[in-house]
Length: 341
Image (cartoon, rainbow, N blue to C red; front, side, top):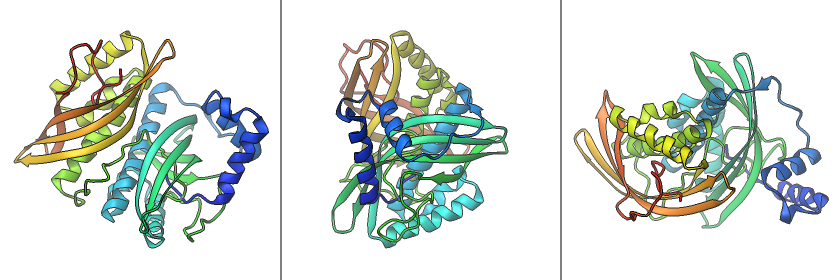
């Protein structure tokens, strides 16, 4: 989750890079993690490494809560974050969001998420995430920073809930006065999955509206597809799709894996028109996806997505996702959100 970043944090990251003498040519997350953790130790997480299915479930709940926090700040309503948190942590988050708004924050955006170790000890778990967040203030300035988040989770009624979020590389309080170590965004870093930015030209729909619910199910569906490819298990996508569409997605995911895709990441989302007609709806997004292949290549593409949705038992489900601007030359089915090849 986001929490305020200070100049001290930036300075410490810089020192870590200088100490390695090769930060500019780093191999990526491993070097970044070693640099930070060697200068600012936080202790090894307890427990044993999570199995792929458990790790995917934990990543999903963290990703969802980050997306929900974006929405909570935009709508000034934290209620969207209740289902991913323990009661205690939810109350901390409510206060943290108030602190952000009182400090002049007008919006937050998750730009990037990379995962560190995830361990499980019975009904407790710990997950490390390196999150990059952008924060926009009332004076129009935007700041971006990356920070290490160490999440504590509890298994409640068969579902993982976030119970804490420590920022061990940051100070105890932000310059704006918002308390540190809270789930609220006090450091700009993504957590729960990948970024789902909203178009700067679009006004977020009011909380509780059909439009807000439609955005939420599309965002969750895209994050679930990231996790489905990472875990080689498409079942995580069932809750956001109709039965027919889920079967189609499962086949498309397998086709991507068979074609050599090893990972996909949603880089950004911009929102177009959302129209609701009774129990059906349509939504347009402009999504940028990144695809990694087994040969080490990484490709990025932006595409227009035309979603069709329907209500089932009071919940919106994705029924179809068309890519009207995609040409016939794409070698294998695209991720549900957009092209990545």
